[in-house]
Image 1 (spheres, helix red, strand yellow):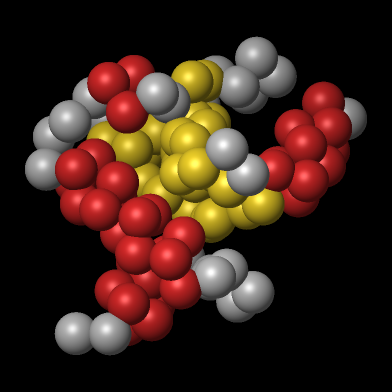
Image 2 (cartoon, rainbow, N blue to C red):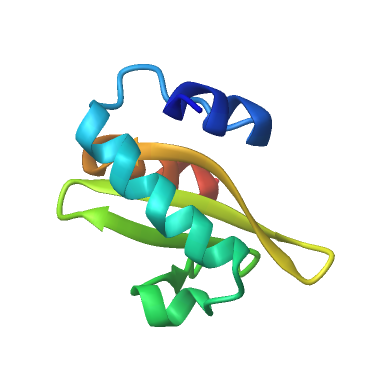
Length: 92
């Protein structure tokens, strides 16, 4: 299975995300899907929207996930710069 199909099946856009970051993000997503609590992976809820969780992949990359029906559903992988812009947009 390619990492692209892994993300496509989950509806996660990975355009522009380096291969090494995608591989690490896959491991994190699998742990979330396996039941590991987000906080054990360093995840934090956003202050402006408590239904959104930010999970660190590396110092410069984040997975953004949302609570849906009691589960955490990853939505996108963002660079730190894009993540900061995402947080600012969420404040509006």
